[in-house]
Image (cartoon, rainbow, N blue to C red; front, side):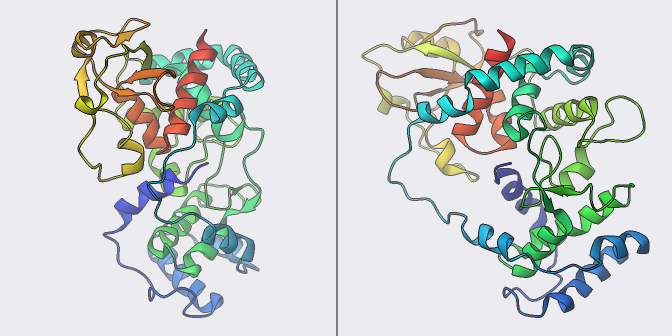
Length: 339
């Protein structure tokens, strides 16, 4: 999973008091773990879970290397072309696997789509993009990874809370050997962080457990609930390909507002206008889109290349991962799966 979900969680965690000094690695790992353990105990985690999730725990230097290799503040030197990314992520193999999984889960996803209002092909596209339909979910010991990231200190408030939440997940009956995932702490088919699991993981088949590791119904219901919680509008597409007139004044529709979150993503989108207003400017949707729908114009690879009108549901995909490359590939993969 990309790191947008982690970064988004930071905002909710900023109000929490740190449990230790802010400087990275300002005490031994073992001493720091005692602080984390005390917090977990205070928040109701059982002693048995604390013991099995901390026995033999040591910092993972590979995790520290991966975290420190993450890019800092982006420059404004331009954007890589979208099409090469799409060629990799919306390829015939992934499309066919998505269609196969769509067919295999028809009885499951029809019920979930009816309950949550999120199209099944969107759920499939997220699952396919995150873990290739469960083909790769990560093999890092989550307790070790999250404890390491908390101790490292670069995003200590975030990861200390995620480690405690992981123990709360473990308290639901998951073994430490089951709780493996990405180096940054995401796990399961939809690559949820522990805090997201606790908030949104859903029992999709009524067996009393939200197993996003192996259970298809739980996986799809959990993704659907995530999208509904993020504001998905039932019956509205994520976006529609458009034809663009040669005389479109792009400067006149340029977005002048700086987004408070992921500004490099949102600065590439135009002002919001109704589809009817876009039609008056000569921008013509190639599929039906009601005239009163609000949409922004996006032509990622520049004049003469494909362009789209993006609806509010595109912004919901960005809630999962704030990247135009990610969101466009999810939307287009979903369209291919549905065809």
